[in-house]
Image (tube, rainbow, N blue to C red):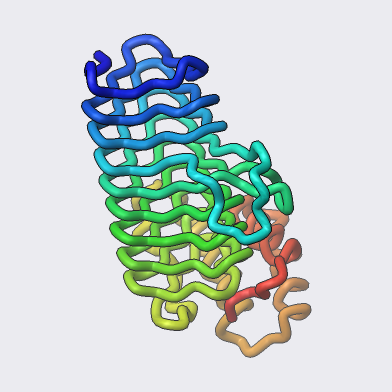
Length: 257
């Protein structure tokens, strides 16, 4: 399962039934979980922890030092969950001590070719990143988010669960859950209705989300006024409760409105 030309550091921990292709390099302090497939010409530097049943395609570079001038060689980490597909030429950097010290990718993500995840990013589960999507440092991406091809996300931005960012969008402000954004710079262009349908949201819940977005975006309310309306609506809707929590914990980039 391990090609004779692969180079594996003595300190690396390799699980059961792991496949490592020709000319791949597995560095010090790397752990790879059971059943993971590493294609030829992959470089994985540590400290990096990779879960089970991932498929990492050729020419990817995972766990390299962060592209941050403040980095001084600290032992920060890259953590990858289970059952992720990571296609050709992806680059995922480790974290920095100025943040949480780790870049974290969850499980069951579909990450296409040439995606870049910078230092200290946190990506949830079941996301789809199309070709050449890129996250700057300290970005947080919720579960079931879709990024179109060449989508660019500015540092410290949060993207809420089930949101979708269109191709070539430039995301500089926070995207609330269930939103659809597009453009350069990106603007709210509606709800991710297709995502709600595909993931089986009940009709009543979809109607509550629509009403929440009406308050946030279509009635010319101040943000404080919109939040007050969301508080009333959230008592009967878990999805609106999630939207409200996202808005109330707004980060330094501000909410996209």
